[in-house]
Length: 419
Image (cartoon, rainbow, N blue to C red):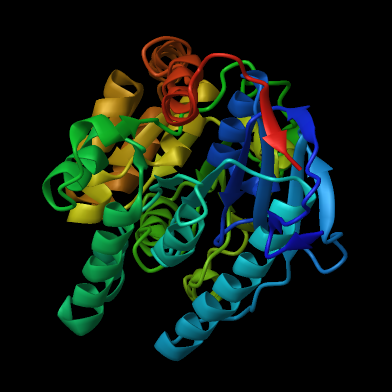
């Protein structure tokens, strides 16, 4: 029989199976988390089995289903979190449901390594509990949670110090830390005091074979000459309010009514941004799509003339790799971006940079680039070449799989296990 996810039978039999990884996500369903889907595919291609625990994408989603060869165990997450206490309640509910499902996965499929992705930095305790049962813990760091808080609320204080403490515990418990860029790795090494050999850089670059420019859909332009896109989360720290101010100047001060702006994504600020858009009289030129999947994202980016990365300058954004910028590059789109250290490192000459992300200067950069198709084409080629070359996902996948090979041994993929 099974108890707490462990075999207690006295007459255990030996069966062959691939080593298996359990991946935990809290902030996104697997289907729309591009980074984690790519990681799971890399593991499966390397001979690993993969299970994922994540929130449901919609109410009708089955509790257990398969996606890309991954066994997905999903749960209904609390919705509408805005204040501090509602966030704490959400974290607690999700943690408890994830812990229960991890026991179910251990009994149903088994797993050899637990990987947890932040935000939030609360799964170190689950990692510690499974380490006691011989499962190594891998921390896949997606965000710097203390810096996110500071960027979002403009202050530090007690919550900032609490987040630093949770981050420190996460670093301490993790057998390996997977960092999305060298800037995050520096935080793990310096602030987290993680030995270099326990870290690996795995960037969230798109898979060039899967994400590429396709046939444009002219109807998405809504009868206008140009289409400009924004892709990503819409929170107070993401600069979408600055983008709306830039569009306001573009339309009402520069008198340009030849461009449709599509804002793809969701987040805590979406309702406020819609209201601000209406207040500014921009509804005829701005489309909010809400959450989009991979196919819908491809339709918009394949139809656009350029993408915008308006994130304001702060320490969090300077250190973070913006997925949207990489996705623009994969679709051969020129980019107008706030001058941020990590954005400039990734995009190089595939972007025009606006110091400080100032809205009037951003509107001017968008206008100038729309009027220069040769520059857009040149920048698009540069961006695509970087996605296929220096930043290629194939390089990142090898580094990622290497983390698990080092933990479990890279010689045969199939191991004898007791069931």
